[in-house]
Amino acid sequence: MTIIESRMPAVPVTDQSITERLFAGLEGDPERVVLTDGVTGYSLTASRLRDRICRLAGGLIGMGLGKGGTTALMAPNMPDYVTVFHGVAWAGGTITTINPTYTAEELRHQLSDSGATLLVTIAQFLDTARAGAEGTSVSEIVVIDEADGVRSLDDLMGDPLAEQAPVDIERDIVALPYSSGTTGLSKGVMLTHRNLVVNVDQGLPMTNIAPGDTTIAFLPLFHIYGLTVLMNMYLAHGAALVTMPRFDLERFLQLIQEHRTRTLWCVPPVGIALAKSPIVDDYDLSSVELFYSAAAPLGPELSDAVARRLNVNAIQAYGMTEMSPISHATLPDAPKAGSCGLTVPNTACRIVNPETGEDCPIGTEGELWVKGPQVMVGYLNNPEATAATVTEDGWLKTGDLASFDSDGYLFIHDRLKELIKVKGFQVAPAELEAVILTHPDVADVAVVGQPDDEAGERPVAHVVCNPNATPTKDAIKAHVLDHVSHYKELAEVHFTDAIPKSASGKILRRLLRSNSA
Image 1 (tube, helix red, strand yellow):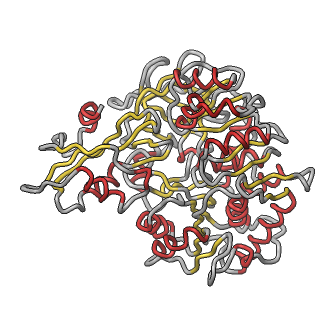
Image 2 (cartoon, rainbow, N blue to C red; image 1 turned 90 degrees about the vertical axis):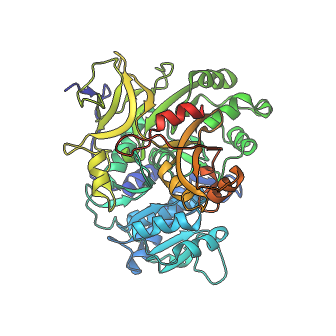
Image 3 (cartoon, rainbow, N blue to C red; image 1 turned 120 degrees about the vertical axis):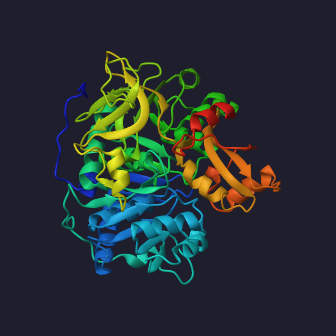
């Protein structure tokens, strides 16, 4: 067995809960502003954030939503997103974070699977929340802001809970984000306090985050990238966030200028905007030292373009929801072109031949397997998918084809998994195929990813029509958008006589991807 161990010094594995880890970063100056709404200017100081978390936890326990209870959070980035997440965690409960652009159908799937009994959202999303909650275990919907006839977040506040509610750090599930994993429909990724805390501590030595820093948090906090790197790493390290409910380039640039941001945490589409948009020159970005990209591959040409435009280091990291998410990151002072960086502390890797199951030598391409304390417990309600992704001795199969060089740097080459990455978000072909097959004119379908300069990839459908049926491409696209979020929309539809399949009936997606290119 060829094991690639981390070259970084190990970090201590503590018995803190994720909120205890966050509170450690709020110590010092209680009047320091740690969260600011980049649109409204609403802010929370360290002491006020802690007080709101503790009072929400007390209220939740009074409602019976402590240990064993699951709360769903469907909201855009805002300061009280942190209040809700950590209020649930401090109460000993589980929180499932939900994409606020979801349709009612997508929301219902996550609410049903997670068993959530409380749904926290904002007034803007109430109609979707109510429709999605029908037929689930949700007994109440609460808004963070205000809406007629609905309790607000402030209405849930109770007597402050002074200490962390009892939890098993290693086993109790605190976060339940949903991921399509290496294949298939979205599944609840069970992450413990230990998973989240250790990943915060694994990530910090790899970055240049310093106490007192401020960064702009436009990456969605419901996504594990924003949740761990921004919400938890920054606040746990004495730094601050300015939240944006959605990405807007002009406002983003204004906030960077205003808050003198040193490090930008981005995805490749934002890199394109920073490299190419003429309005970038209208703002003072001289404070920026580092551009970090993750969630999707950042090509060397784009990386170089960002670096030249902003006069910064442009580097990458790698991870996945099932790893809390960080397994690899580039040290700011040691970049290597095209690499996702070095293995984070307390983590080991293997490169495995997907055909033979044998380990590959250094420099050879194979599937990346990762082992460490940040690896998930498993998928909720899905032992089969868990067994297919995590081996009995704890190795997580990432589904990505990769290699290491002799210096320990990771390079991602391709993927074994079928997922399509659109602006860093996972789109499962199986989900779109199931939707398309409900169209009365469709006999068979396969969905694959097509490279896209802005989004990384876009879904493309290859459709076999029923005899004598003549649906239009626009009709197929519209049918899909009736059921799923906008980022999952089809870029193209191709009509074909047959879908290529193996003898066992598996869709041969590589053949279709080559036809879509």
